[in-house]
Length: 463
Image 1 (cartoon, helix red, strand yellow):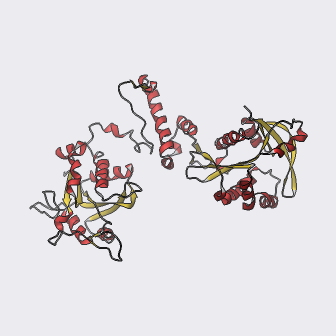
Image 2: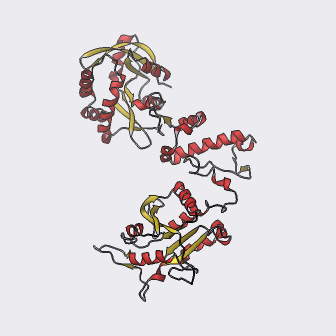
């Protein structure tokens, strides 16, 4: 059985010299992988070995010719000396070809992609060709033409990230590093792959340490010296999850909640990630100040969340009248323009607002407490006028994140915070009690054309 084979075509073969080093070099020497580098200019047909031309339609730079590239890729099926177009009397390689094209407009190269390619190349019927473009890129007709070619199984355009390189050679090296190490027999200890970043449920790898145990005043985490393998495994798992939240929160979309145990969920919660009511991971959550650009989002969020707090007898007509009278975009612009009105947004990792709070400050904020028996004089009060979250955030702890940020803000503006919540909304009352609020009285709150009974709750925020 032939070794897994990867051909690289480039106008700078020397750029690929690192393939002779480290694990790939050893794997080539031992016959575990067949990596060949070809000079694209070897199949050029003019005396100047031209591989590019000016772009149709004008513009800067040069474009690589599709006819030259097509010949080069076909020529890799033959040749034994590592140069494109040199047959050397060798039998053509009958394997189907997967053509890999580095380009900024390609799909991101991921660990899953590398593993899939390694698995494919380990089979006896396929090999890979990496086409390293330069200048302004390869003529756009090449890829669709290759996809129609009988000997080509697939063409994949891939990218290392959202940046531009001078050519595809660096990307080719990265691809080969990622793929070859996953081929059978290349790594001396296959277990070293298991806990790497992206290899286990899309989480980043935990931090690693070695001797000395205390270096320059920095000690290795004690758990790693404990000899307790279970504790070490739990610590590493927690570190992986926390790192992923902090550095690559986008990867959380790939985590299956069903695969997370209670310890995992506790670690994620400490990092601001909770399980929403729809079963998806929500967060990391953060709170930010609302601005003019958020007016429409605030109006939509308020219109969506206000009915969730209304008592059952409230009619849809009453809700609509209240929203129109108090929660329209115009009203939110007024709030944002008032220096005594403070609007905070709770946003998820995509920046989408999932909750908001409105804190009212100023000299008049204690007036509604006059009938409760609470001393008003000499105390700076703030009213927590609104604190609402989307339904999928209820019961997740997300409200606590928003409340904590709101109270932190209030502590810089007032001595105490009060709020009114519907007397029949026991869940909301319990939530506020968990945040330190206590019932001090009652008030009437009008929704549409109907008066409702609220309980008034108060909490000190003074040091």
